[in-house]
Length: 169
Image: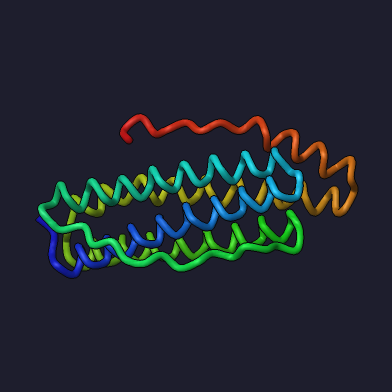
């Protein structure tokens, strides 16, 4: 079983993961609205991944005999300056989530909560992948700048992303 402090911290992370999903759904809707269906697809897949992450926390909290406590989700941004702006905000958000996961790992170590520490290792690895993926897209967007042809090519590439639920989801 986990401590009340850990349960509270995991519930906070659950809320952050749900906000992440909401943010990416907003970015997907905006991308679709401005005619970038590939970007919309990428962000929709990201939304699906974040919901999977949220459910991992949800199930873990319950498996540890604690109560899931859902909180209000803040409204995400609705408008963006450009695709580059969306991915810069995505990277900023993913760095925020990485710090939050690392803080949870620190708490698990402090509390000698080995089960939670082990559980969180999947998220530590996932965050490395998340940031690397976003950085790769940012590099491409910076290369093409505002070139219509370049943006079209990036949009086409992002349209091919598919959701692959984790094996243990």
